Structure formats: C-alpha cells, structure tokens
Image 1 (tube, rainbow, N blue to C red):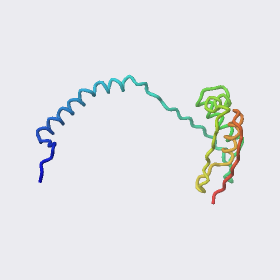
Image 2: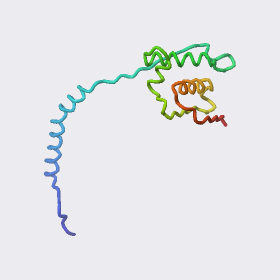
Image 3: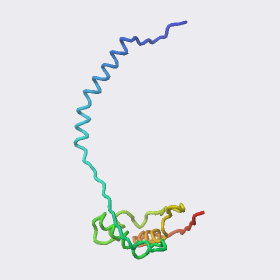
Length: 136
C-alpha cells in the first residue's frame, strides 16, 4: 500500500478548524452590522368581510363580490379608486393570466373570476382568450 501524496494529520486538522472558527467569529460583528442597517420591509394584509356575499343557496352575489374586491384594493394601495390601484400593478401591455381553482371542495366562484377579468380589461390589457373549465 502506497502512502498518499497529501496527508492531513490530526494536529493539522484541529489547527485549521480552530483558525476557521476564529475567522468566522471575527466576521460575525460585520454581518450583524450589515443586517442592522438593512431596512425592514413590512407586509400588509387587508381583510374585507360581508355576510351577505353568499346567499342561502351558496351562490355569490356578483355586485357584492365586486364591491369587496374594490374595497380591498383601495385599502391595500391607499388610492382613491380601484382603477388607480390596478394601474399601479398592471400595465396595458402586460399579459395577465387568471388562475382559478376548479377543485370541487373549494372552487373559485365565477363571480370572482369575472370581476378580476373586468378590472384587468379596464386597465387596458387586451382580452386574448377565454377558457372555461368545469370541475370533473
């Protein structure tokens, strides 16, 4: 059996690991200082509720869904109108896809999809295709 060209002794390993630990520890105050100067970005959550949005048959009230979404956008973006809010996040040359859920236990109500499409088109996005899927 031949001896390897490069052999690390236990002493060399401990010396190297110790130097690495000291180097890392010395760098931590610098990392902590960088983290302290990084601004904290806060998230916002808007909750809009209305007991009348779903009737006794489980059908959504389209006008109320639209009002709730508009109120949520105005509250979130702090603008005067929902259209101003939508213009802040969508431009007329954008391509927008609306993903809806067709899972039978929690489907996206068509009323929600319709108001989303309406607002996106109002911003100036061209309506290119309309697909409708039903739950299997």
